[in-house]
Length: 78
View 1 (cartoon, rainbow, N blue to C red):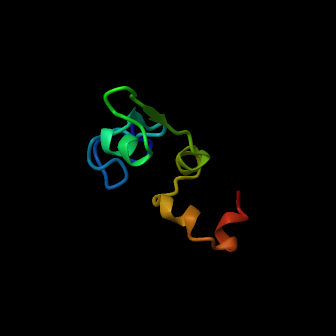
View 2 (tube, one colour):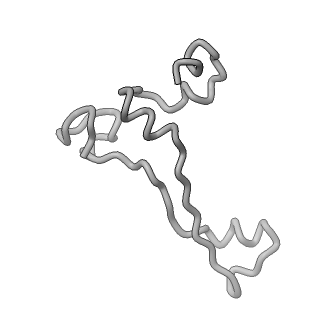
């Protein structure tokens, strides 16, 4: 459940009431092909756990792009 809106829907959860913090999924065959692998012979599963998303929830930060803006005034808070 979205900790910002309590599940009622907001811009942070894209009006779904839920937040994705540990994204994952199957690798598209085109990505495998571009990497030099035959998608008929190989498949891929991608996942990621960035500390940014958990920090966003804990500190109620509304935009993940703040973490990649390289503004030390923001980053030094964490």
